[in-house]
Amino acid sequence: MRISTKGRYALRLMLDIAMNDAEGKPVRVKDIAKRQEVSGKYLEQIVSVLTKAGYLRSIRGPQGGYLLTKHPDEYTVGMILRITEGSMEPVPCLEEGSEVCERMEECITIPLWRKLNEAISGVLDHTTLADLIEWHYAKNGNDYVI
Image (cartoon, rainbow, N blue to C red; front, side):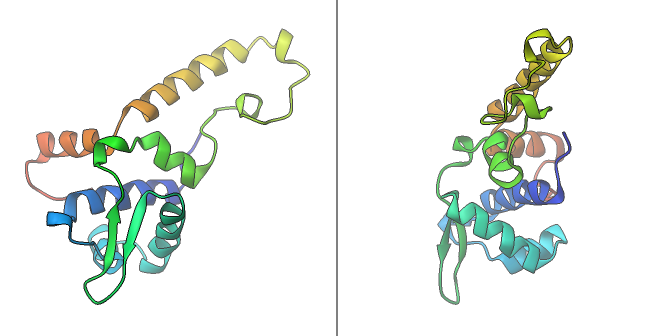
């Protein structure tokens, strides 16, 4: 499994909004792009996906931007990566809705892939944006770097 730039930037974008929406003030993509040193146009594409998924709310107007629809402790890394990356399973035969592998019953490696999948899901589904922010501040104080 390799996480693409889309998944990594989506996570950084969500963290940036969580850390910069002081008093519920919307965060502009232009400001996120500058802080994250990422193309604003690329972030707009990611914002569109996250907004359609209901993870972000758009505020229009000159003071507009984006806000999280939930508290950072309600978003797991797994939620964000699955909406941008798709499946997080290490092999296709474990993906929900995939074709049934003819070799599944006698496959010598399937226990390994299941254990790996459980480990990956365990980390992704039990780590929240709030956890990442807490870890960041514990390590860096108030220095802002994602």
